[in-house]
Image: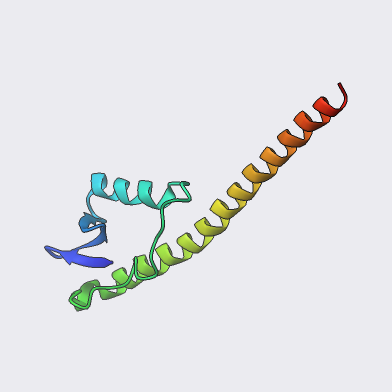
Amino acid sequence: MIVEVDGSLALKIDGVKFRFDNEDEYLKIVMRLTDPNPEIDFPDDFVSLCEEIASENKDKAEAYSAFIKEYLSVREGIVADSQSSENNENVTEEAVVNSSIENT
C-alpha cells in the first residue's frame, strides 16, 4: 500500500514502510519489485492508496501506483516465460539422456 510518512510517500511492504525519497529505502523497493523469484507474490492491493494521503501528494501517489501496477503485470509475464523456458530445458535434457540410454 502506498502511504504517507512525515509528508513523504512510502510503499508499505509486509508492515514495513519504505520511502520513495530515501535512496536506501527506494533501493529496497526496486530490489523487491525486480526479484525474479516466482515465489514472491504481490497481492492485488499491493499498490493501493491509503485514504489519508494529503491532497498535494495524491497525484504523485497515483502515478507511483499506476507505474508499479503496470510493471508488475509485465513482471508476471517475464517470470512465467522464465519458468516455461526452465521447464522446456529440463524436458530437453531428459530427452537427450533418455536417447543416450536407448542407443547404448
